[in-house]
Image (cartoon, rainbow, N blue to C red; front, side, top):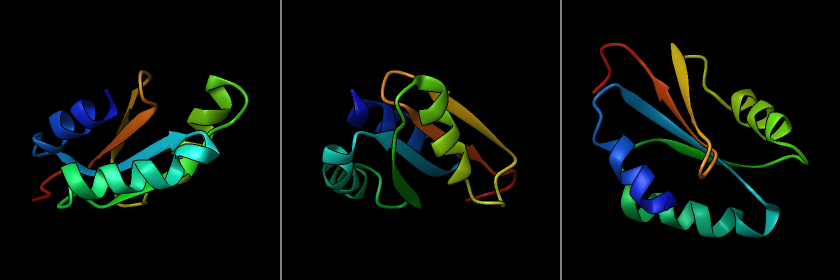
Length: 87
């Protein structure tokens, strides 16, 4: 599901970055997945929290300042940053 979501959002011109929030044991696999399915999009993988709210907070804290907004995709806790005029 994460790979499908990443590929789908990567095709949207306004998406400039990905931040994936996941459990500690999945961080490296998510980095590898991002590099394989969306190497053209800058990305980060961060550890989630004990609740959805904590996980979203961890993800939002990793959003680059250049982003004008975020989408939170709960299924994979995927955040996609939007930057006007990017790409």
